Length: 380
Image (cartoon, rainbow, N blue to C red):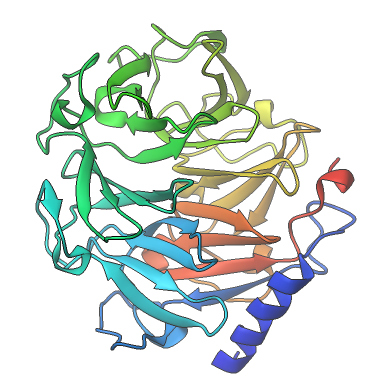
């Protein structure tokens, strides 16, 4: 597909909304294309106006999110950079990261700032960008207006400390994922400490709200606080106050009622495998899941089943689960039929205007699936 065709595809897809499929696993109207990356890891300076995204290399993309300007943003774990893909003209540019690793508490120039193994990015309601860094053990914030980089949580040293105090003085250990709850508090998957932590929007203080530090199995349900979390890897939230937590070693997904202090297993048996499509998600098996996105458009969860090299969709209305990208084999494409497109350890996923975006990490591509998301009124 030519770059012109890709741009027309994106524009038409965004305008159409891509709703109304008759079956969640019907591939007749579904299509996947590469929207960024060449399949070869690398980095080339794009120039002041950016460069065509499908002609420009990317390097192990992980977290992905739509920004307040409607562009697609993703971070690269290997280079530390955060990139911006203009979905109107298909141009790619770099907005943060200098390609080096290191911890800097504050910086006035995002492009001159080192970021160490960023795993995920998020935007707050004010349009500020947040980047969680595994190897700097922190969360950085880039202010929308000034571009100033500041530390929001973590002091750059691995450890576990700081609960009940200011988040910037606390210690995290290899944090992997972040999300905002319905009150604007920041949730952090502090996976190296086997904990879920919360930074208060009002006070800036940090606290553990789930996990005990023990690497033992998580019960099917119970209180959130004081309950072990086995590999809290990725988290997303919905507008109703629920959070959805992926357990990497636990091979499962839990729904969290943070204010009610409850957790409930909703997908995955805890066993490792690749089974259950077409049936209840709670009876399915996963293999090292590492990403999740809630979709308001079809009231579903899109789960990155990384070591199975697939993306799976769980309807929160019916509880059923289906594979929507990949066939369980490790590979790179081809574009076209989503179920015939192999992926290579994908990590990130987000949904916007009926399109599902996936960071196909070790294929060094970002892919987009159209014709998949259905309107909530048609969800089974």
